Length: 359
Image (tube, rainbow, N blue to C red; front, side, top):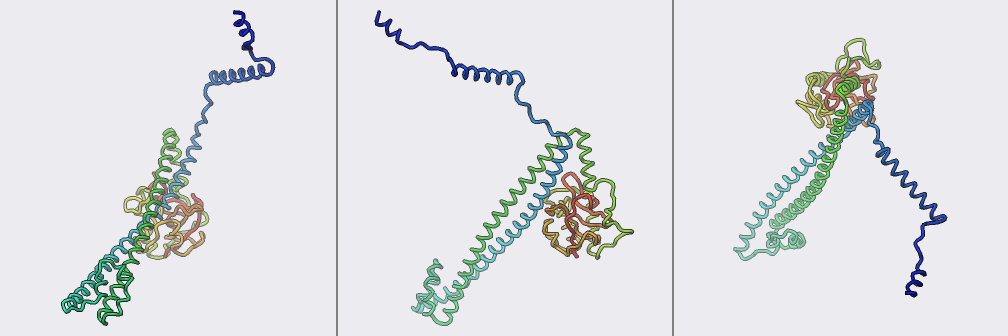
């Protein structure tokens, strides 16, 4: 029992913190209590304030502009994908035609070989040419020297045709790879456009009916939906005639499209995007324009703003992302944006980037 008491006496007792350790523990405890009190008393950190109607409208305008930029990239990728598709189809058809001609030549050579076989004189070179393995034949084409003139010509023709088919098929493979890349690019731009437009719609849904109506009115004013007025730099004392009869035809087509909806990627006849409208208008006049704004600007003679005449193409924004058809008096016909149909608009409502006279 005494030993047990001595052992218990030697066992250190658990003592509370003292000195600096005590002060540190107290500080931590107080800090934790203060934090807990601020959380329980004030709640979670306040969320960011909702954007104002003005901020929402500005963001919607940016999204529409970004969607139009992506639309023109989509149009360019679509045009390139269509060209790649035609190239692949042409190469496939060419390979098929060349294969038919090769089979005809091999059949003729086979007939000759049959005649030689019957006469007991089948040449080894003919055996190679009729082999199912063209590579072996090409590698051992030195046998050409061992046949007669007629056989030599036929064999050389077959060799040439096999080489041509090989080249055509290699080109077709390359174009198929390019086509796959173009289609991937199309999907990427399509996703960007749809995302931008969906974001714009979600933002518009946060506005009241009155705020949405006010935004539409202000957007119309910026894109030519409000009262028409002449641009001072291009206003004339009287009507200006189109530069030629084809320009008049293009303008007539554009007038007929007024009121039709804006749809990205559309070239008519029931809907248009901006470059789709100008392309369709000039197509009606017998002139073929490229598909995108940034290629249409180089489709004719570049002219200064002061020399604009009806029928000229007018371009906007630093990235050449919008185009309209000038009709005189500082006005144009264009397809403005989603939700806004084809209309007449002043050209001074957007940042002017250049002009082109098509014909």
